[in-house]
Length: 390
Image 1: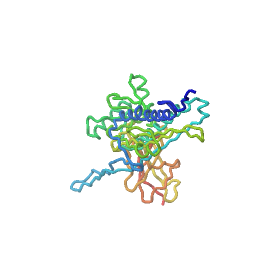
Image 2: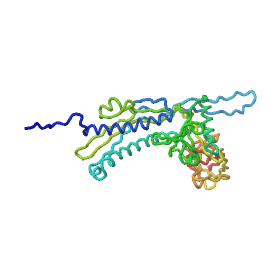
Image 3: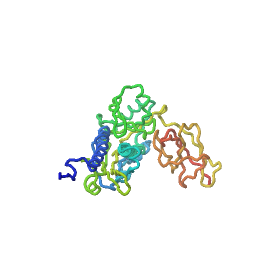
Image 4: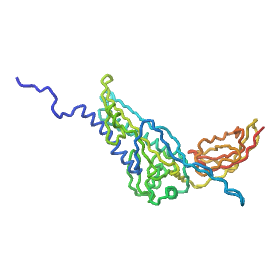
């Protein structure tokens, strides 16, 4: 009777090899074919591994310029400035899981049910990392410049960065909404590349790399020096990879594990990563605004006691018509009305009520009212002494 071979053949490609191949493919597409290209486009030279829960900081310069109108012989008041670091949260591991049922594979086929959803999961993870970075940039309140064309705005932001970093050879990266640049691209022959789900153009108009993303408000340009950008990350290598049998590479930017859940008859995929792009110096970010009138407009503010109760004031505005998406906000102070510059992000200011009745802090006697656009940036402003009903 002939011998019957019952064991698997040597080098048979089985389920374990297929699962590993799927994990490696995910890691490669995340790192080698996408994240690496983004790092190169951004010019990131500092990729800093951190420990879970480490607080992230951004550095700013704060202070007040004193009045320079000093009478002869009097002591000149000191203008004090200091470099501060502002905490912006902790870096943490992000975890994602996806499962595909036997029924889904039966209905759509393995490629559609598993591989296509793997690709979509990868796309969404990348989108989250991008969105976090752009939300961070949108929240900064650095130097603001304005001009009436895209090319003029890029020139101004480029020039400001040469001054801020005191280096004529500084490499600049600009972040722009695709709709802002669409008209220019429609009539220009430009070589565009893609990285981490974003289109970018190298050496655009000779003023640096332009990266397009819809998270940047239309009409705005956010620019900084490439050397100002840092990538912080939590490594998925080492004990984490061992504990959860993660597939990763030497970078450790993402860890992946695919498995089969028999009691649910489904294929699962988990991915772990902790990546945050930041700028080191908030002062090294310049906001450009494409605006037909790129200067701070004037609002006439009046304060009286019409309709006010005790401790209240009635505020009215004139000589400025709100544009689309604009609104009035205000802030009160003691002795000196809050100052406003064009394009300044007025975080923490209060919406001016439709009836104009406000209740200022008891010791405050000055008010500034500003018109802000849909991004909360000042377009016009005016101030007044408060008339408060006793």
